[in-house]
Length: 325
Image (cartoon, rainbow, N blue to C red):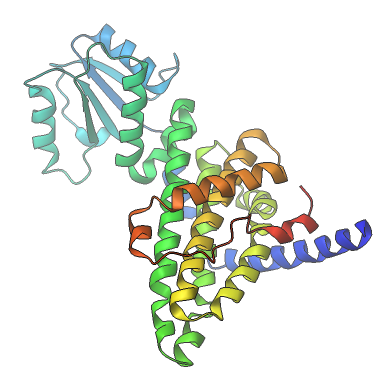
C-alpha cells in the first residue's frame, strides 16, 4: 500500500508542478518584486527627537533604525514624497499632522500619514499602529515586513485575509453565469480555477517577499512554491469539479467555502514554510482549515447566503495524504 501511495504521490506532484508552471508563464511578478525590494522610508515625528527615537524603536521592534528618520514636531518636512510613511505622535489640536495631511492632498506621491495621540506611546499602541500602517501602505507594506520583523506577522496576515476574501467573492460572482443552461456551465467550468490559482500564487509570492526571501532569482522562488502551491491543486480540482455539477444554489456555497478555506489554508502553509523552512504537518494543515471555516462564517457576505449543511466539515485536502507531510 505504501508503495502504491508513493507512486500516486509522485504522479500527482508531477501533474501539479506542470499545472503550476503553465499558470506561472502567464503571471508577472516583476512589479511585486520591485515594490517589495525597494527599502522602506519612514519618518517619525514626536514632541522631541529623543521621544521620536523611542517611538520609532517600539514601532519597528528593533534598535536598528535603518531607513528611519527622526524629528521633533516642528521639523520642516519639505518633501513628502521622500517617505513611504510619516508617523506623527501628538495630542490635540494635532496641528503638525493636519498641516502635513493638507499638503498631501495636492501631492500624488506624498507619504501616507499616520497619527497617534496615545500617551505614553507603548507596545500595545505600537501593535495597533502597525496594523493600521499595514493596511494603509498597500503593497509597500511588504517592504516594511522585509526590513522590520515586527511588521511581518501583520502584513502577511493581511495578505492571506485579503486574498481569501477576494477568491471567495470571485467564486460567488463567477458562478452567476451558470444560471444560463448549458452555455453558462461551459463558461464557468475551469475559467474561475485559473483566476483563483493565479491569485493564490501571487499571494504566496507576496508572502515570500514579505518573509525576506531574495527575489532576484525568480526561478528559485518558483521552485520553492511548488511544494507549497502544488499540493493544493489536487484537492481544489477534485472539489471544484464536483461542485460544478450541482445546481446553482447548491453549488455556489461549497465553491465559496472551498475558495476561501483553501486560499486561507494555503496562505498559512506558505507563511509557515517561509518562516520555518519546511512544510507544515498534516495536523497543522487540518488546523489551518478549521481556523478558515471559523472565519468564513463571520464574513459579511456569508450571512447573505442560505445555510449550507452540505459543506464538508473535514479538511478539503484529502488527496494530500498521497504526497506525504
